[in-house]
Image (cartoon, rainbow, N blue to C red; front, side, top):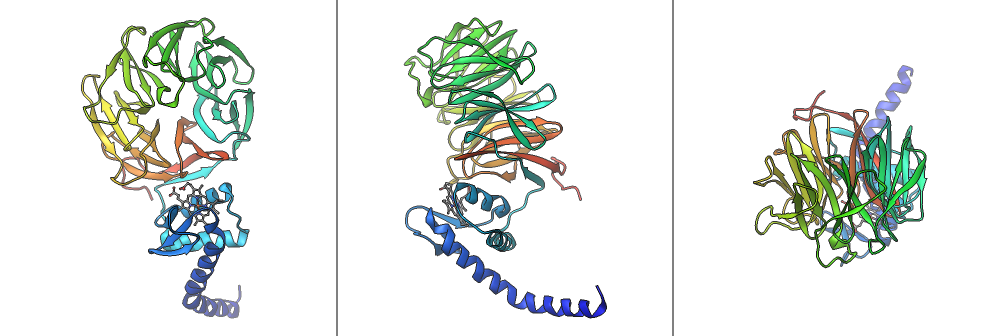
Length: 403
Ligand code: HEC
């Protein structure tokens, strides 16, 4: 650039700096008034700037708008490339939130609307999908179908005896497996009163399946399954009774049920209830092992509880009062830190006690997380889409922030 150009640019920048903020704001307000109000009202500094701000209203507040605006597009908000850039730039400058880590969105999952399982197997990453009954495999940044079925969901990707297993939900409960992740076959079937396998877990050389009516089954080969426990006596196939995890901790098998609490078994057959603490939320969804302790997440109030020996539970995290539902749906350990997916937020802890928010990836839930190739992967729901994010670069989880 020659000298005169530089002077002209400097003059332009001065003029722009004085006028552009207002112009950018006017433009952002007009885009929002025009585009955002179709689905919900929007307020900015307590003013209604789009749609009907009566019942269903969302506030412009600190948010990673560079992620949020693409969700709105996926949900059906129509924005030209120019409007999108202008609005995102304005919102990030005024109400932006950035994290000490970087999130990269992979290509959308081809079918289905929710990622409910993520599992590395033989140097590839696999995902179980809700809404399309498929298992997909990551190739580069794109997902390719590895298994496509007529079931509604594939849950519980688990490695057992060198094979990758998954369970089916709706209309019936089957167990499928693959030796290479690519060629799949049905391995076994649960009794016809069972409508879904929601969780799989390994315990003492056997594979366990938890169903949508609060029952447990056991198999040593993946083919023949025998009843191994009744956690919820009523035995209805209902969301409340979904067995969400089966985790071996310290030689005891722990099972969590969506609405009906936690149970454990030392022999894989007889079960006792586990009380976190009187008055604590009873539904549990996520379980994770970190630093020799077991962590579980509740389906209400955004609580994380921890036990070191199984006898005593300590609450180590609770969502801020007044926050959304606080649905703790996933845990993963990556780079020496524990991560929790709480509603659409990701929290990180170096020690299980101190937590910081490091991501906001969906207005709904993050039901699957896994570490793969030194990166953290998170599966989100954004009906009618499912997206997976990869946390690509990170500071030190101890805090402090690398340059
Ligand atoms: C096609 C429908 C639609 C349009 C248009 C739309 N949204 Fe949304 N928005 C949703 C849905 C669905 C949700 C998630 C459920 C909820 O929070 O109600 C949502 C949630 C939000 C949230 C809360 C996100 C969170 O988790 O913190 C914000 C903020 C938001 N929208 C802002 C906007 C803005 C700004 C625009 C215009 C650029 C916009 N929306 C346009 C459908 C839409």
